[in-house]
Length: 132
Image 1 (cartoon, one colour):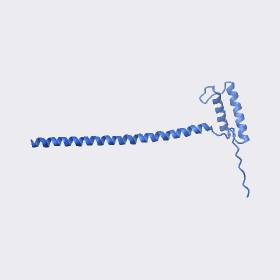
Image 2 (cartoon, rainbow, N blue to C red):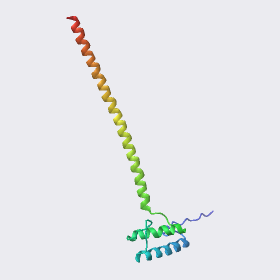
Image 3 (cartoon, rainbow, N blue to C red):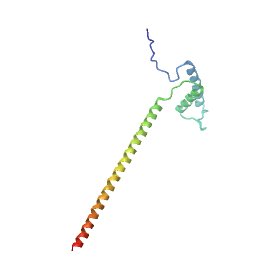
């Protein structure tokens, strides 16, 4: 039996199908026109002054309209970095707390040992005083 070859074509940023590309093209044209004519507003109501923000708004609108657009790969990397940073800090705090506990045990052991030696000295003094 002959096996089918899978094509290793890379998906474009505007989605795989022609429908997605058409949606993206129309939404991006609309948003960039609004941006260039100072009509584009952000979600909070302020005017958009950054072209990168205008592109992000256009892609967001295209996603809402049904275009198949993959998310930004740099966001995935930063999310992975944040997760690993959280794990590292959790490990550090756990190590610090165990180190703190062991240090507390050592100091309490030293205190009890010094108390015992002080008790022995006073007992020795009392017996010496009784012998005289």
